[in-house]
Length: 153
Image (cartoon, one colour):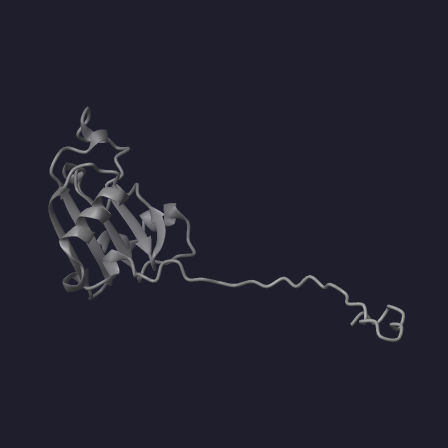
């Protein structure tokens, strides 16, 4: 009932006031963990192949893959692929510095994909993801590249 309206006449309905109400509703869109965080036994070959194709913009099937985690001085999880054909950006120059071979994540946050120190130059064709819990998140990429933990990885 509208409190500012005049009282209704005998037999009339009281005047109603329309009030807009805004509500926010959150819906979880992706409940699945990243593929490299799941145990290898839970991931099937189709998921590995689809992940490879979508993440690395590849049209081919991977020749081989390895999915592992390492605990010790540094803790990290990795998923590495060997492509069945030479990646497009390496067709002309096999040692192309701009090749984005390994993507580095820290606590599931993408950091960089231009780490020459992460893989030797002769392995630039290998594609993969490395996710570490131990690397600091609040430092610049230049400082992170010189990190001792990164050299251990």
